[in-house]
Amino acid sequence: MTALRRLALAVAVVLVGSLFPAPTVASFQVPVNPKIDHAAKTITFEGKLYLYTDVGCVYYCTITSDILADVKRDIEQTWNGYKFRCYDVIVKAIVLTGPWFEIPADAVGVRVDRTTQGFRSEVSTEGGSSWNSSDPSARAVPTNQGSTWGINTVGNTLHTHTYAHEFGHVLGLDDGYYTDANDVSHDRPGAPHDVMSTGMDDDSGVSQETIDRLVHRAGIKDDDVRCDLGWEVRIEWTDSYDGVLDTMIFDGVVDTVPLGDEYFGISLIGRGTVSGSRAGWKACNPGIDITPSGTVSATFLAIL
Image (cartoon, rainbow, N blue to C red; front, side, top):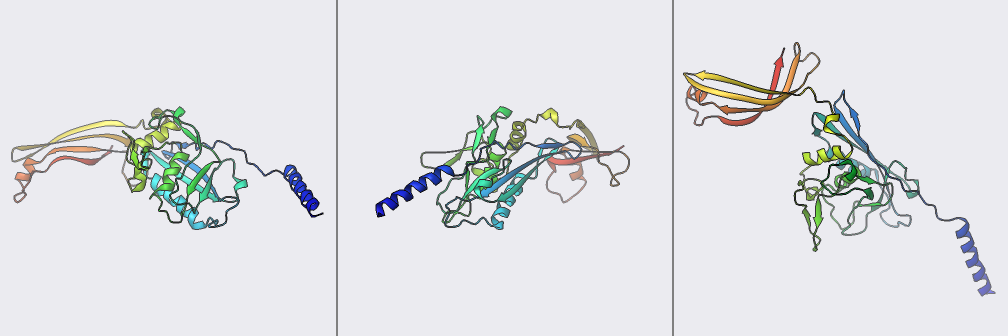
């Protein structure tokens, strides 16, 4: 009798399993497409992350509000403060959490691993090609499933900007580093040392080359942004001090017409460099040991 009961129970389990299969979630591409605001001169990338733990998670299974805040902070502090031509590039991260079977179709689902030592985080993407291509066809598109990040990993020190680096993949970029046979990471030849290479280990931030590649891979061309107020300006003037001539040269681009009460009339503002030498000025100021010379950054302001 005992054997018969066990057999019946086993059959019942099989039947239940066949009638109610484990839930599955469809996989979708989740491209992070930028929005351009020509009036504000901004290009905004907004990506959504959905953090979850394994179904059978036993230890360190809680994704706290502090973890969500840390991920968002690292991403936004690292990726903001840069420009594409005359437009500000703005990166926003929406970081959510919940059960694995409720991953939104418009979010990159990230399984959180908090127990494995020496864990290598990754983002699941489709497509892509050479790391240094700026063509839109080279863009790596993330999916809403398959990504795993080590977060607050026990016994393992994360890279300084792991979250920001992985979000770079969410934005469509590839690794700017490679790992050798001894599992040591190196910047790829020609790759900028920044958050997408071994610069994730320090505070090197994001290079202009990477920002330009990010925007170009998203399908935005140089001609798509309206920086057509850019006039190249070269001004040369000479001061005379007791017959000694000091010539200064400003080279730059005027690209801003500020509005409001701060400036009178119609104003033009630009940035560039001033170069020259001030031998005459030095001669008229006894006690100065050196002759000021060289090239420095300068701001151009004209009131018409």
